[in-house]
Each structure stands twice: as C-alpha cells, then as structure tokens.
Length: 193
Image (cartoon, rainbow, N blue to C red; front, side, top):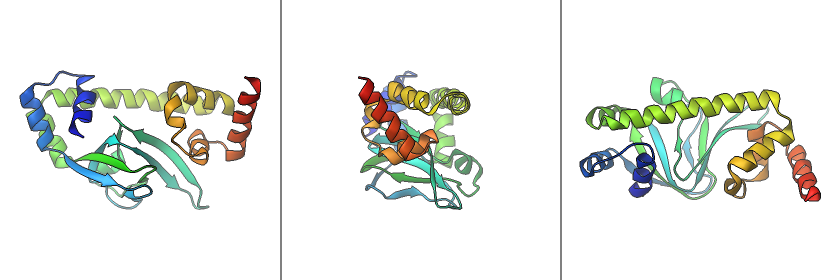
C-alpha cells in the first residue's frame, strides 16, 4: 500500500530511502468496505486520506435529501474535508466508499510534523494544493459555461476508465445534471457512433 503513495510522491518530488522510512512512520492504514463511511457531515475531519486502492466519493445532502457529489477519489488521490481538517470545524461533507478501499491516513499533527521532518513533503503538498485549485477553478468555469453534454464529454475525456466504476446517478450529480439528462446524452452519443 505504501508503495502506491511513494510512487505518487516521486512523480512530483525526489525521495531518499531515509525520507521514505520517515514518511511511512506517519501513516496509518485503513480499509473501508463498499458504502462504509470515512467521514460523516458534522464530524471533525481528523485525517487526510490517501487512496491506495478503491474508489471514494465526497458529497453533501441537501434539505430535500438529494446528494451533491463534490469529488471522486481513486487510486493515487487524496480525499478529505479539507476545511474541517485544517480548522477543526465540523465537516460539511460525507465521504464514503463506492468500492472496497484501502487508505493511508495522516492526522493533522502528523502532517505538520512530517512536513517539518521531511521538508520536500511541504513542496509535494504545495504542488497538490496548487493543482487542486486549478482543477476546481476549471470545474467551476465548466459548470457555468458548458452544456450538459460538453461537461460529460470533458469528464469522459479526462477520466474514461473511472466512468465505468461510478454509478450513473453519481456521475449526473457530479456534473450537476439530472440522471435522465445523462441517460439521454449517453444514448445520443452512442447513436452518433
């Protein structure tokens, strides 16, 4: 499990053998069964979670009981309610497993200590945060300026393999469209081929 994390880190920064040994000491493994919660709205998020295997989702539920997907996290992704993790405020998101999953967890204190003991990890996390901001800006702009079909096509182009693992109703929620609209889009795209 830890090798998946090391590979992800080394895609962005270089690690020594000593760095790896220190990094490993800060993480705790956790397994989730399909549909099991990692975090529920109202709890304080105590960990950043690295997905070594499986698929999770971050979402909230509105007053009508409708789920609104925010993020999907699969192998090589980090997942958390970041505001809650950083501030200690109650989480506004639920996080649960779409598939059986294996995670590596790090607490806030361990995260802070890790970045002090292995300074290259501070750079690694900064790169992740920068990429996350850019991704969220693009997603926001897409939700404002693109049609439902354009949003689906962009998602399919950037993550084709993941679409096969996520139920259609969750994809529709993530795109901010009705499941029936997504069905029509997919049907029309198949008919055009």
